Length: 376
Image (tube, rainbow, N blue to C red; front, side, top):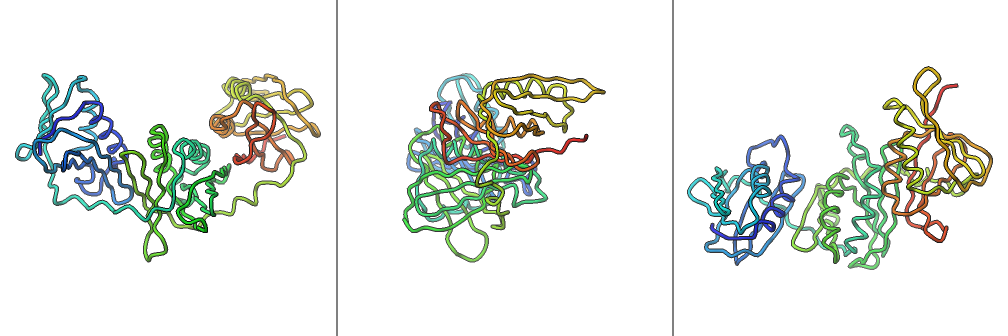
């Protein structure tokens, strides 16, 4: 194997593939990236039996072949190389990387010991890349991080005709996003629970590429299912989680006793400032009344803070306590100038929705937060 390639093309391909490699692999070869050259193209692959990643780039190849090297080390090396073409060659039990006057020699691992990457499942349809990335970001933020409850670490995808719905929850908050996509089968009805971290990393990478993302999904076979995503010169597959998932739609109320509209930037800044005096798990309290919302944190014995901001409020005056981190997470992905908070009572779930420049609620996205109980 011997080829020449632009530094940025190689560094980008290796970095994306190495990102999903395990930090503590069960066997040494799983810490590697597989470099394979054939027909004038370099394919960089990574696989840990759960997630596979693969990028294909055109190169100037002198000879075909394959080599398996440490993914994280190669990623560190390629991103630090000078901005010049890179020559890569397999020489015996090593790979040589030469860029300008910089030269690195890396030991290789046995290619024959590397597992075969799973094939992409059958295509289910396509989604606009930017829409896909935005939707995933809005929903994955609500997914759980506790690996002892695997189903809560996933994002549920529900495919129903031309509507694709994403749902996630960690028990303290939940998010739902509906988007339009282009199914291969107009009558498709299926669901899949995808690891949120894998989905988020994939969306961040494929979104900026533009164009469309192909969603591929294994259909009704025996055993664990797979989901795949492909866009541009990249593809990734992931094992699906157990399909059990809480019925979170019932948490979202059909109507509200009160609503508040606040600017996203204003609420974000005030909550950040006021929560400086709150202990890590302590809430911020927001008192809503006509024309004003007052944000407070702290107790009479400790540091305290309060700040008011304008608020378009309708309903009886109400005070609600929020986890400030959950509130800020929702504001960060709302993708709108204004947020509407919908209330039933002070201790029932609060639903945040985006409001456009015209003052109207944008349909399709809802972010729910469970209020915190406060003493006294």
